[in-house]
Structure formats: C-alpha cells, structure tokens
Image 1: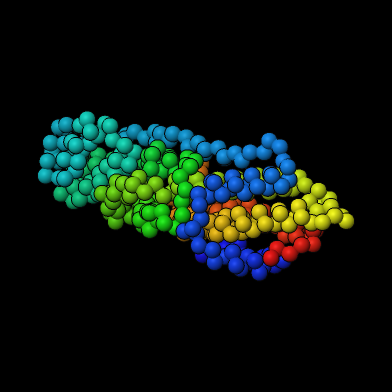
Image 2: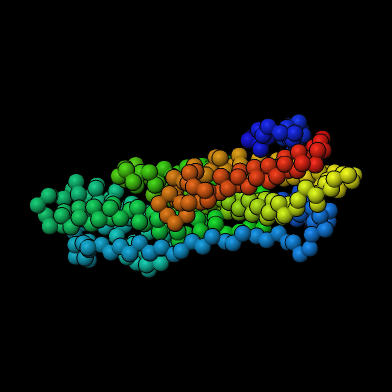
Amino acid sequence: MHLFCNTNSLLNSFLATACVALIACTPSSGDVNKTYAQRLENVLKTESFKLSKPSTLTVKHFTHGIEDKATIGMLELAQLRKCKLATLIAEHNNQLGKTATPANVLSYQIKFIQSANECLESLGEQEELFEKIKLTAEQKQASLPNYFKAMLLNESEFKQSWHISSTHIDENTAGFSETVSAMEQIAKLNSQINTGRINAIEPELIINQLEVLNRFKYNKLLISAARLQTHYNQQITALLMQYSKDELCPANKNKQKAQTLSNVFKKFYLEQLQPYQSFLVGRLETLQPLYQQIWHDTELAQFVNSESNDAILQSLKRSAKSHVTWWQGFYRRCEISPL
C-alpha cells in the first residue's frame, strides 16, 4: 500500500504514525471530508464555503455505423445447413437478434467469424457462396474494433463507471478481485481483436464478465471515490491558500489558532483521510493500467492514460501532495510542531 508518506518535512514522524491507521475504522469518506472542512471553517471563521461534487463525465453514445456489404440470403442460408454458421445467422435474424445489446452484437460478430472459418473448409473455393462468406467474415473482422468500442461506450456496465456515486468504498467492499479478473478478460479480448487472434476468443465470456461488473459495480465506486476525493482536496487546499501567515499565526501573539488548525489537520486528514486515499491509490494502481488498455481508443482515454494530467490516479496523488505541501509550509511559517 502506497501512502503519501515519502515527503521530507517536519511531518515525517507524524505521517509514519498515520500510515498504520486502520482503514476499516474510517467512517464514510464523504462525512469525514465534510467534517474536516467544517472544522477548518470554524477556526478560520470562513463564510459560505461548501464542498461541491465534481460533474459526471458524459459518455457519448457511439454508433459503429457498419453495414455488411455482402449479405447472405435465405436460399444461400439453406445451402449452409451443414454449417453451424447457418444456425447462428438464423438466430441473429430473429427478433432476439434485432434487439441485441452492443455486447451481444460483438459476441455475434466474433462467433460469425469463427463459424465462417470452419464453414469455408467444407465449401469448394470455386463456389460463389465461398467468396461471399469469406468477404463477409473479412468485413466483420475489420470492423471488430468498432463493435468493441460500441460495447464500451454504450453498455451500462461501462458507462456507469463514470457516474458519481455517493456510496462509500473501503477495503471491505466486495468485488475487487472479481472486477480485476473481469477487466483482465476484457483487456485480453481487446488485445485479441486488435491482433487478429479471433479464433482464440471465447465469445461466451463477454457477457459473463459484464455480469460480474454489473453485480459489484466496483469500477463505478472506485472511480467515483477517487474523483470525489480529488475534488475535495483541491477545494480545501484552495480555501487554506486564501489565508496569510499573519491571519494564521499573528506575530507577538499566542499560537492557539495555529495549534487548533494543526489538531484539525491531524485528526481528520492525517489519521483518517490520508489512509483512505492510500487505499484508493492502491486499488487504482492495480486497475488503472487495465482501464488504459481498455479505454485507450475512446474519448475517456485522458482519464486513464498514466501520462495524462487528467488521469484519475495521477490527479488524486497530485491533489493530496498539494494539500500536504500547504500544511508543510504552514508548520514552517508558524513555527509549530506537527507532533
């Protein structure tokens, strides 16, 4: 677990103590942030300051816009009765196929390609149907990345990952290992599609992995929690930066105000919010690389690319560092100990 405890400052000794705090004992992060902000307000006598939530990231609907140039008619379908492809096409053409979700459509395209390859082996190369099936399979394979993207941007299991949730997450929240496993399978699927290893794909696993993501909603909880904490850090840091040294610890006066502020920082941030953020960082360090593999070719890439300033993990770390840096300067300016 990586805590923000590697800074060289007067805070080091206290940070070391804070690093062993038990996350399981931490109350709701939202409540702690609000209490932390309220206590700071009380000491600073701030007026009309209120923590706000970040906006929900809008995921635009994506239409793959693909139409097969080659189609297989009913009479031709009858000629394929010995191929599994015939049954697959017939099932897809019924009402169920017409209402298929993006994930179901992607699964069908993959099954078509796999079944077509098997079917072609039973047809003579000189047959007109052979060329039509071959062409259709090639078109579908070339379009698979778009079908995959349509699943990412249209299926609720992925779209909802970017919605703000008020539900707390901690190390006891179920679904982390299951979500990692599911996301690994989705990332593997993306790699197989992009490298043309279609026969290695197990289409049935696509829906199975989405069911796992839907059951736990762990991605939504984690991404939402990280974005909320980042936003709270930024707002509270901005509030503190409005105050000068003379306002925080006036010369030739006792340092009671500064000491009270220090106590608030230690009780709410160091003892509770810092371990919580360490937990979020640890989870994101596992999942964000998978997010990057999966969402790298979408409008959400900036939020998962480790080299982007807007990346969720990097933004959280940066906001925490900025907050602690302000307090380091506070202890130096006011010449009081953080212990």
